Image (cartoon, rainbow, N blue to C red; front, side):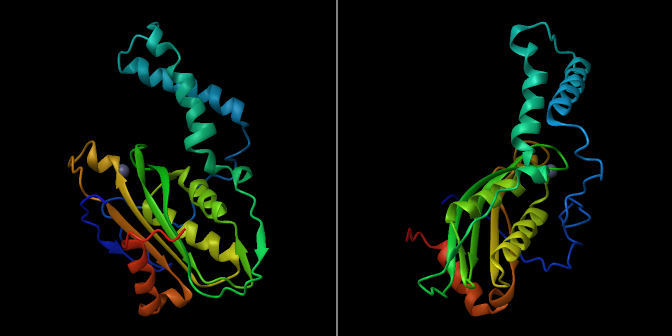
Length: 231
Ligand SMILES: [Zn+2]
């Protein structure tokens, strides 16, 4: 594990007043009601047109072979890949399994790699998500937790909101209050520009139900900070 300067913020659901110079207003992604009136094909066409404009203003020669396809490439990447999580149609279907072993202890899924984008600069935020819950009758396929993390990551985001969105979604899907989510991420808007700090990472957490109890919280944090691979 690389050297870290992680400070773990623990936002309660009500708290939205800290964001370290990265203001954000709500735990819901601010989307307009008409967000999906245009289909993906039209969005790609329009973004491509506007991105071409940006490149032109920057003085780039779009007749150059290497640049000619860039506007369309960027537009497709935005709509179909890195921001595909804006569209509820892309939300992963989740199947729950009967918890037939009656396992009722903490279940941890750690080191889920995610890539997102800072909504203030549109540059990558990337890191690891760690999730835990106490099963309540049903369990979820482990890969589904990954998919939920990826779905919310594929939006313009702030890390605090991403953390809470994952936590709330898992609460809903798993029908349990006992959810913990920790995100440990690097922000390219901090490392590649601005203060050019390449070593710092940002930690955010969502603790709910039993995880508000210091003992369970510590059990989870100790586990994700250990090098144990129990899978
Ligand atoms: Zn940023």
